[in-house]
Length: 381
Ligand SMILES: O=C([S-])c1cc(C(=O)S)c[n+]([C@@H]2O[C@H](COP(=O)(O)O)[C@@H](O)[C@H]2O)c1
Ligand code: NI
Image (tube, rainbow, N blue to C red):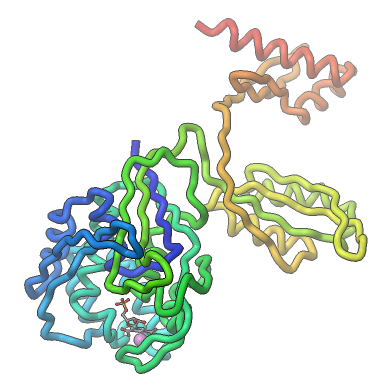
């Protein structure tokens, strides 16, 4: 079974913290070194060191290089990445697009300063090779702490988060803290934005390996580490999201069509709960259960079908019983029945249509369809 990874970026993220966490989680340093050697025009050595951060053991990977080039364009870097994992090219492209946006340049002509140096290229290539080596089907990343205050670099003094990071973290959950300084660098943001398959707290996971990665900064306010948990998803558990909005001004006759539209947009389930809103106003909360890939279309349906101006989302774990659909006939009328190890549930629309066609009570058709489904399952060899 392919593993699931959870990245804890609650103290921020940088290329070297990610490299350290991967090495700490058991990715052989030779795997990272080989990937870096495949792209680097000059010798680069990765060296592992066990360090402590605020009293906690962590792994640091030093990238040792005497880089003779200090500024590279995205064009230059792109030409170096032919032998790199596709995710490394994608992460650097994100950096180029973000830099282009903040400086007002075409991404191809962007001049990288620190992020174009060979050590940053080694971070990106090594981290992407490490994730490829782990072969995870899911990479869930926590909301990212970005730090606070300001940082000094080739661009002079920049606010934290610096412009490139704010651009890279569009659409990504992030927040200030945990201390003063730059907790999330452009390289860390670009890597996580590229590698994450979803964002949120730790999913249900049987943890196998834990990597604790340190960078160069060691503030005394907190353990400045990024953690990587590698494990197996709890069997039968799916990571889904619940989208929600409170609505107090929609013609109530529209609600059935709204629920139908959310299901048509890909929601696994959609439902309403009556609520009392501020000032004692009666209203409804509209809920939809969605897989990460369906969230955007279902969110668009919230906005198109209702008067809401905001949609909340919460990550949830769902354990679902295995299910299958069987078809039975009741007096010649076809009824679909959803069967799980503990239930048989006839499709209500089919039952209603059959009851009307047969001029029989709905509850009789319901009971007969359930019984026939149980017989059909029970008589299987
Ligand atoms: O290299 C470039 S062009 C660069 C752009 C920006 C902007 O926000 S714009 C910021 N920085 C700073 O460089 C260092 C190193 O970043 P890494 O991602 O290589 O660790 C960091 O302090 C950035 O804020 C560089
Ligand atoms: Ni820049």
